[in-house]
Image (tube, chains in turn yellow, purple):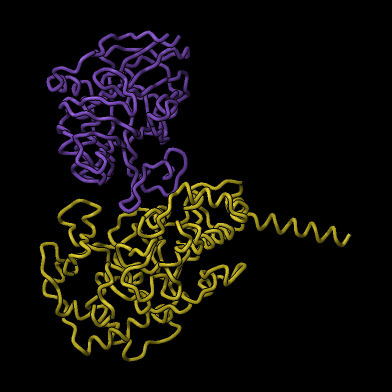
Length: 346
Length: 269
C-alpha cells in the first residue's frame, strides 16, 4: 500500500513537472517588455531546455562553440577581455559580443539592429561560418539522435518532436529570462541603500551628460547613432546602413546598455576601447566629424578629469553581481537541477 | 486531359518590350498599402491554382540551358518564392474570401508545391490575387514552422528576414565564381520592400465561375523573358548576383512581379 502511494506520488509529480508555469516577474520601475513570451509560454521545462541548449557545444560545427563560448556569465554574458570573439577554425567574429541581459526589452538585436525578434537571433551565430558555422538541418538531426534531447523537448512542448521552431523558442525562454535588475543602482532606486558621495555626484553628471542616449532604467534608448568613431579600414563596418541601405544610417550603431559596463569591456562595436576611461576620453576629445555624426556630439561632451572619476564611480554601481552569480543562469552541468530564481527574490 | 479555354498563349517572345505595357495593364499591382481583412464566410468551392514558369512560352525545366532575351545563355537550378493570402477576384468586386495568413513556398524542384487547392466562396471571377513574399508582421513574428521554417533556406540570418524569392543557376555570362547566378531577393522595409500585392486578371478578362463542382483550374504563368527584359533590364553580364536587401533587390523584385502573366483557365477532367 505504501509503495502504491509512493508510485502514484511519483506519477503526480510527473504530471506537475510536465508543464510547470514559470511566470516572468517584472523588475520594479522597468517599462513593459517587448517580448512577453507570446506564443511561447514560459515553463520550467522550456527554460531548462533553453538553458541546456545555450551551453550545448553540439549546436556548433566542431562542438567547441556553444552560445556560452562567446557569452560568458561572469562577463554578464559578453566575451571577457576580447575585442572580437573566437569562432570555428580560428576565426574572429565580425563584432564585439554584447552582454546578454534584459533582452526581453529589445525590439531589435545586434549592433546594427538587423534582427527583429529574439527567437530568430540564435540563427545568426549558429549559421555564421566565422562563429558556430553550423547548418540548421544538421543541428536538428544531431539533437534528434541525442540520448536526452528528445525527452527534454517532449517535456518542454508537451508532444514529441524537434524542429527549428522548438529549438528557437526554447532558447528564447532562456535568453529572454536573463534579467539584470539588482545592481547597487537598483537597490538605491528601491530605497534599500544610498549612494556614497562620489557615486551620487557621478549619477548627477551622468544624468546631465550621458542619460539622454543611455536612458534609465535600461541605460539605452535603443536608438542607432554615429558616435564619431573612425572607420576601421581593416574591418569596414558601416553599421545600421548595412541593414537599411540608407546613406543617412552610415556608421550608426545601437546605443548599448551600460548595465554591467565594468564587466563587458572592451567597448564599442569592434571592441576598440579597452577601458571606460578611453571611452570617456573619446567623447571628450576624440569625436571624428562626419555627415551622419549625432547632432548632440558635434562639439563632443566635455568631461573633466574630476567628472571622469565621479562618472566611473557611478558606473560601477551598475554591476549586478547577483546576476553574474545566479545559478539559474549558469551551466546546468555545473549547477544541475532547478535552481531558485534569485532575480525574483526582491 | 486539360483543355485550355484561352489559346492566347504567346508562342514566341518577339516584341517583348512593346508587350510589357499590355501585360502591365492586365495587372493591378500595388505595394503594401492596405491590409487584407480576415473575412471568412463558408467556403463552397475550391480554387485550384498552379504556378508554371515559362521561357519563350515553353515550360521551364530546371538545369536546362536557355537564352534570355539578350542572348545570354542561362540555366536555373533553384527557383522558389513565397505566396500567401490567395483569393479569387470576384467580378462584382465584393470580397467573399481571403485566405488567412498561411504561407506557401512554391518550389519548382517539388512539383507538388506548385499546385494549391483552397476552399473559397463560389461566384463569378475574373482573376486571382495573392501576396508575393512575407509581410512585415510575419517577418517579425518569431520562430515558425512549415513554409516559414528557416531550415527551408529562405531566411537571412544577419539582416534578418525571409526572402521573397530565390532564383539560382549558372550562366557563362556571369562573372561570379563557377559562373553562378544568384538572385536572392528580399527586404520588407520601406522604401525597398520586395513584398508585393499582386492581382492578375484572366487573359482578355474572361470570367469564370467557381462552383461546388470544383472543375476549374487556373494557371498562373511566370514568363521569365519578362524577368530579364523587364522594367530594369537584367543583363546577366552586368547583374549576375543580388543577395542583399536594397534598391537593386527592389528593382529585381519589380521585374519578377512583371513576369506574372495573364491567367489561363482549364477545365478539370
